Length: 98
Image (cartoon, rainbow, N blue to C red):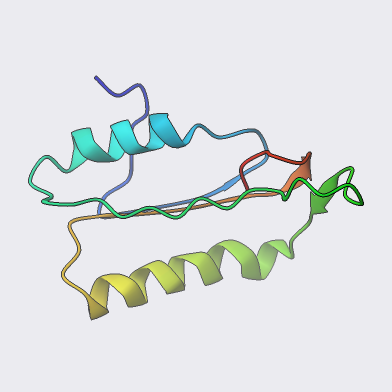
């Protein structure tokens, strides 16, 4: 059983802490048992000897509304059962999920 609850059909979040792709997928799978397939994309900070830390900031009045707009456009364009759009902000180290 999933420990996360999701907004349906699109769950859009800005996260300032780590995320677990496994927990997100489990929650999505539980929320959408009728889905025949689940496609994912997970970005991460590249492990590069020149990168010690990556800090992502955002412009609050535009970021979350823009993410919602992208999600809404995708739901209008394709017959999706659901959608997760999560993005990290803050300080991240090489190998961490973005």
